[in-house]
Length: 148
Length: 119
Length: 336
Image 1 (cartoon, rainbow over the protein chains, first blue to last red):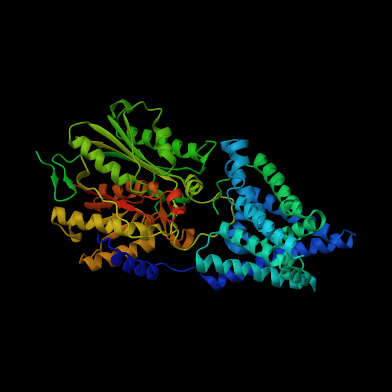
Image 2 (spheres, rainbow over the protein chains, first blue to last red; image 1 turned 30 degrees about the horizontal axis):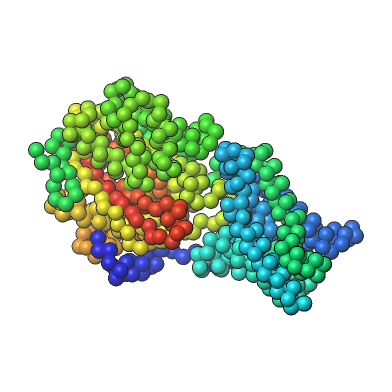
């Protein structure tokens, strides 16, 4: 097999032609419907909490927690992976996707023990979100400190 | 009305994520990171709050909303405690959501086992 | 006496006979078009065990025991066991074979393991180092996902180029004497890397390796594709198969008539949502041990070129942005 750079480039073209792309339009529609739907559920809970007299910030936090609990339950009964398969980013991008990303490895690695299995692997996917969220918040904090 | 805009804006943010997955081959973990950082920075310059005012949960439930919460938290902490707030604000703001996910995720791991039901 | 020929092929002086074969698969494979050819379809992906890792080992153990039983032998008769899988450090095979107390070689060739086991096993037998050798290869969908991709419960979509790891194990017993079919030649592949970095498109990474071993096999033995009733690759899947045909056309070999692929045979593409097709060590192993050998016994295929293919990346190398090397081994199995 000729493995020269030219041959590799030619092969890359051949592979691109032979490999079907994702069906973007359908994927986007399903992401829109499910992702939007999850936000609607959130808005309904938040409206209800506000109607009960809760402060706006608290209502947002409690809403997020309710969505997290729902996502954890759906993950543990094996339904969230099916929703994710159907909806793609519609299930990944909402806060429910974050909860799923924590719960799925926690369940998967239970056999490796409660410390190095559940405890450590819980963050294999969601950990970077916390790391980069913290980094970005420090940037914003510094910016705010000097610019306010 | 709040529900309609939550649906449309929340859905559109997810579509942006889907386009990134399908067209750039970015993995889901990278998209989560990108969205949280983007939300935090946009909030830092004051733009994301406008989207939240407009779309409510449609802007708060997707992960940029998580970044927005971090930015709001750090700004509040800086106002109250100065430079110390820079290092406490973000984690304080995310404490609720992250702790809920950890606690319930942990309980779920204790109570369930891998089903092997392949998606 | 010299038994090697050309660049990388061996031609056996006393071709070892495939004495018996056994295949054990999981429930999804049991719903596929080849279900009637497998010895055991387990309704339980955990095979009665507590973890995916031990489930795969239990599957390996059961398949090996069944193959030896079908050969009419005792485990003590097996001189060497050769086995490979996809888990870290080959643990599926290591744990599966640990109770047998027979000399053991673990093989890692990713999904090419069955080709490697058959070739090396035949060398051991023809070389006079063993009367009976057992060769096994296995994979488990859940264990492979956990090792190479994401936790099962994570809500993600698989790209259309991704394969579906077969839960299955195939084991054969090779013997110095027997009624065939016989392993008459084997071409060991070289590592080929055509610069593919997408771990979700393994067919594209592996097709060039299959092309390379096929061309060298044809040259070494001075035969062409039409010499064989069937040329069956391991787990190229639909995309890799198309790429292989295109590359072989370019090289002047026409494989359109007799090329098949285990990854395309094992599932019903339309009904089972497996995207590019089946993959994993167990894919080619179970299809060979269950389906292909059955067709040889019925003399529907008399001269088979079996070419398991493997992608030799690891999670670390993919994350580091390295390209994916691949390998394929060609084994000739003939009826007398």
